[in-house]
Length: 361
Image (cartoon, rainbow, N blue to C red; front, side, top):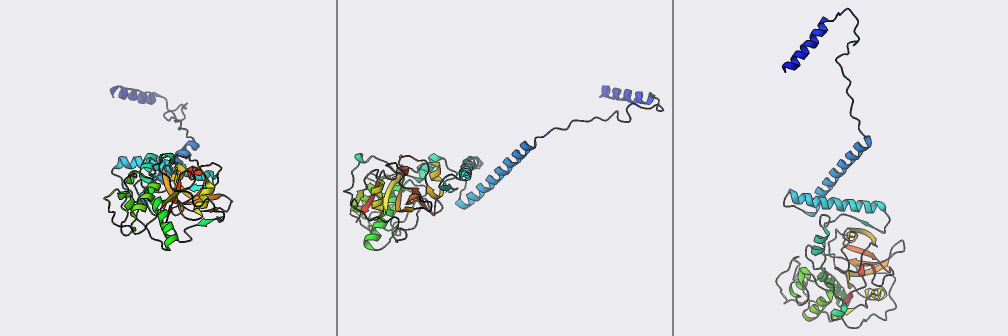
């Protein structure tokens, strides 16, 4: 401080010693300095602002989504983890829909904050086995069908109950089975009754495994031996429970397999009744499907089960299957999905013609 003070005194002293009558070379500006202003890139500023706004928009969207789906996280760390997954899902969906080069569109749903592994374990549940390793149904009764109409919708014919929700239980196999049995019971007995998936989850344990997966053919055998209760008598709980096998309101005689890898045979069967099928439902597009005729990339790794309740042709001429899913009405087209038909692959899109079967009554 003393050094600085002495220096300042000397500067003042020098100024005082100067002849003020002489013109100054400073022109009164000797103690002013022009500092360079930092240069900013307007493009970078715009991008940074856009990112901030996008992040804020996603945060708000996530909050709204949490309210809509009743999602509550245990702590802020869990919320941050789920937001990251949600953000990646939304960005994928927005990029996909913006491209606009597919026959279907995607949308956020209740799975949007789950990893693919979490989604698969909680919302699928078809245990694939090659047919040579399991007992097969009797002969295919629809082999000679030649009058299949160009379109079919069993919903419109009153043979399909409302879309149900398996929730966080890997028992798609039970829902696919029950929907097919509800359909054949309507066609044979003339009444549409909602039947019990929970009874299959709790009681069909000889070869099926409740929320850990199962197969429709085994479930058809169980119902043929025991009957199945109504939904009101044995309501769905979304978890493995204790068996109460005293109720069997509806009976079937057995089941038949549709010839493998044959979409023509599958069409013959669906023209006569709803049919259970195994499919590969693990892809990002399948999980986020919203509407349109699905034609996305998927293989023949059967991990999910749905029920085919019709078929038809879209306005642009694309042939499709109409599938009833078990993920509630907020997924897909009010719980349904249209999948492209006759793609040229013997197994069909997502393996839909690989393992199809239907109950008999």
